[in-house]
Length: 353
Image (cartoon, rainbow, N blue to C red; front, side):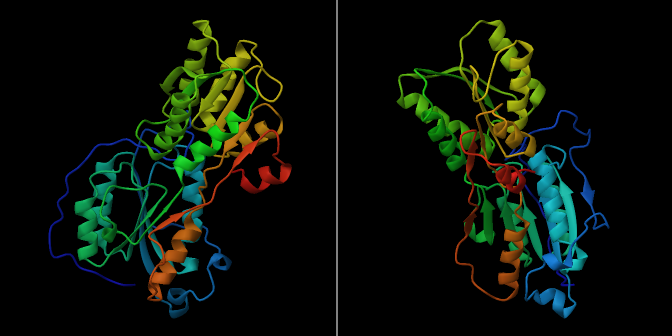
């Protein structure tokens, strides 16, 4: 195992910023928003997953990685993301891995400080908030720790991290809005249920819709509220709209759980939805239950957000271990949207999680 030593005491300006990326928040959330794990047998790595030419595994020297993520119980997306990382960065695949979770920047930054002090080779980060990272990442660089971002970007100079592996949230939103524009509606009266405000997913998915509404006279946002990725909050928002007697024919929910909550409110009030209904239902993240709803015609659209980023991260690590220069700093994963008009059972099996 590679070792490093810190010669200075780390000091960081803490910033409390709650952000969420792709994700559909579960209703029952644990009390602890941060936990730290040393490597355990729970990370059931499969040696066959390691790419050919894994130099560290072949030499018997483990690569020590510190992985900082958001609460794995936050969403189906995040649970799948955490599982993917644990399976890839296992002892069987040539890694020693330390995991930490936090929903606020100060929690994650404290974990980053500890991991740098512990001498990790790589700091792998899905940041809770975009700001406040420059000092600790400079400390990482000064101590030879290479930083790889995943899922979310941060506001920091590019020379402080090796690569950023992300979804294009703006493109996710635009793909969804472009599809909605193809629907034969005389007017678009939209209930817009937003995710956690300020998150990359919320900003991208909101921005695309808002731009279209601003540009078209027959597009209107009837209600725009955040449900913080939560199904119950989304159900309450839609129930309130129904009670107010406001007319609407589209629900644009920025994740699958919120779309599911919205549908529960419609069902409770006998309002039809989906392919042959009165209300168009749109969600994001491609949870399996959501794709199944699109396939059944109960929903109209679901946008993909890919949680399986471990293979991209490992490719970066292996190139760096081999002394190669990365051809690009930002690695954008390709994603797509699924509508009731063209989804297949094969799509559900391949893309649902």
